[in-house]
Length: 498
Ligand code: BG6
Image (cartoon, rainbow, N blue to C red):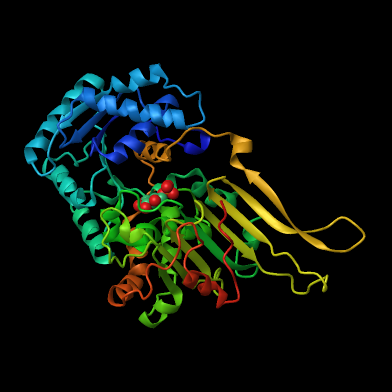
């Protein structure tokens, strides 16, 4: 029976989850705690098994031990009672096994195949396999190739085979296209689940529901009423221990074509005909496709890069590094809804505070009623994280004999209405793969349009050295050039505050 999430979530059907990169950080920090949460919510099927696959010389016992350590930390850091639910723990660990294997060796895949057949026989998992590639991106195509050669990717009768691919999906347009081309020789698009973990965030999923399920919102959501949009994805942390990765990546590649464009697409898309995966993904692709192409001569005016002071001293970072840790862009969306409404986006490390927010600035009234007093602007704020919620800022009369306006704010906080359940953000994504719902995953064209849009900037930056790196202080609002991007248009960023 197909799962209808609108009428509540029910346990997924029988399957085996194979995690490539079982000993890695992502598996430990996010995938396994998410599985625990799913088990706790009774959303995993009874006929379920997890196979950890990794080059590391682990055993199922050592794998369980490191899972337990991580889970204890995760539970202690969340708002629950601080204890692991032992019944759930036993349920899940009873279903775990480990296979030491090498992605490059076909023998390892033969062993995996034999193991999966054995599990199907004993746990009645029905030959349905979910392969989770929690591995370095250079191994994505190797793993998919092996799944093809060993026939593990081959669906037959009622047996499904699905592959989850983490980011980064490509390094630029050419490499993303090449990867798509390669994996599509083995898999059908309907078998591929390209993860963008921002889509696992409740508040990101809510953007679409807020817009299209409230009659009040859509009539004002266009160029007639909106002056401009600001999207901020600010982090207070630096590159931490990821210098090696970041030196090849930088802020633009790391955050913009994927996470930030998801926020742009959710904010700017037309209403899909349904919540069907392809209906939603097609509308999102259309928005990103409508972003005006930047000509090389426009890049300097519309794209800013910055580097925080101290980045060059981080581990695994070159002392002469010219990699950006901040970027701000002005985007124009050339369609009927948004023509003339700039979308300013910024993302950076080591900024004043951790804040992901979409701020919609409405146009002023045609005539100011009170000429002597400043008219407060109207802002709608979608707070993605932290302090998840939605606020509306507007002007109200300050009580008293004078006729003056003050800035006030109506506030909705998720916490007040729905409480907070400990979650990693991967629960919905993993559950969706199990039930075969691709809505929250990137289709090949979504990925390629994202890369195509940033390609001119990557090219321009690749051939023009940054002039003044490092150019912003840790804990600041970012470089001055980021502010100038808006000042030139007579606008200003909202202040990032902690
Ligand atoms: C990742 C980036 O995809 O997203 C990181 O590689 C970044 O550099 C992270 O810190 C931000 O995600 P979140 O969920 O912490 O906001």
